[in-house]
Image 1 (spheres, rainbow, N blue to C red):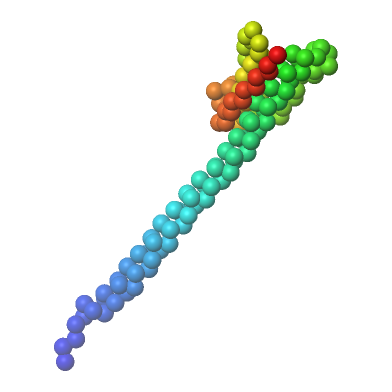
Image 2: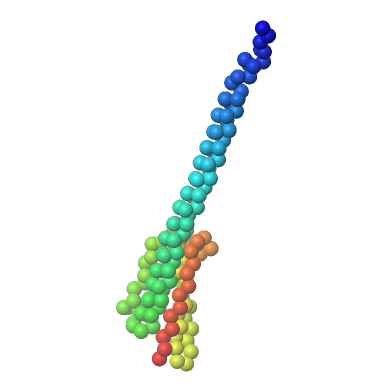
Length: 128
């Protein structure tokens, strides 16, 4: 006999609310997964930079060792693409110590060491 006219108008609201909540949950999940993927990509890039920095520091030690024990004409200056190094040499009465710092993070790092993301230290001691 008596029909409720309000129920006919409100029928689609529950469906709309359910769709909005499901869409929000999917969007949140996708955003979190994208952020986690971004962290993974950054970490893998840092591993590459770290390896380049280690090899740059090792190159510095090898080059300085060559300069110490051979003539400078026999030791060409190393050319590194995405990394650079600095050398410090300390000598005492019976040893020579070479400290090498390898820096890596692309071409910006070669011109400005403060822009480098990876820094590795190596030390080599020659006793005589």
